[in-house]
Amino acid sequence: MTPEQRSFFRERGYLFLRGALTKGQVRPIKDHILDELKRQKIWSSGKSLSASVKEMPAFQQIAKLSGSIKQHDLQARLVTQDMLSAIASLAEARVVPAQSQLLISLPDQGGWTLNGLNWHTDISSSHPNRPPGIQAFVLIDDVKDKGGATLALAGSHLPESQRESSRIREMLRRCGDMESELRSGNLSVVEMSGQAGDAYLMDMRLLHTPSINSTRHVRMMATVRYFLA
Ligand SMILES: O=C(O)CCC(=O)C(=O)O
Image: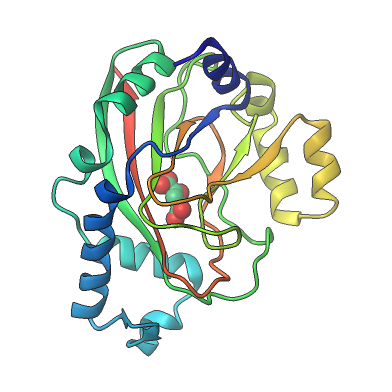
């Protein structure tokens, strides 16, 4: 980890790691997801096989798919020794692994929007000046912009933003002139798109949300959370 990467992470609350895993490392996970979508009669060869799953509201669909498709040894497959060292170095503390899960959305969930998303943090932070944990998001397949990648609000981990957290969430819900409001608060929306094998490391104080997959491709990502020991 370079000093620049460490200071970027401290300031923005996330770090992009291009090619953290090779395509060969993520390919078996992609194949498993596609096999399971077919076996469970949900989606195959570019077609939806289940009207009930297809018609679910976008975020309910993600929860349903992520709950019904399990990958054995997901954490060991996703987190290389290099990634683990990067996480420990950014945390500046010992970390322990917590939950890991697949994040899957079907294609064509509707028009992409920043309206009505579900911005949240997963755990509350007992200490405003250090992350309670670091969450890794790994792209199992290429995810294009507007392809349902997780969105994070860079800068929202800083103590001044945390104090303003309810105002920021309200602003994100209203989605008025959001860009200029975000800029004035030194905040920016990061879309975790990229190519298979890319990864994002995120300070768990950052507000984040699932997003709408407006593309014709299944969104396949996976996540592992690490808590500070
Ligand atoms: O991309 C998604 O589906 C949401 C991910 C999320 O909110 C989480 O893992 O905490």
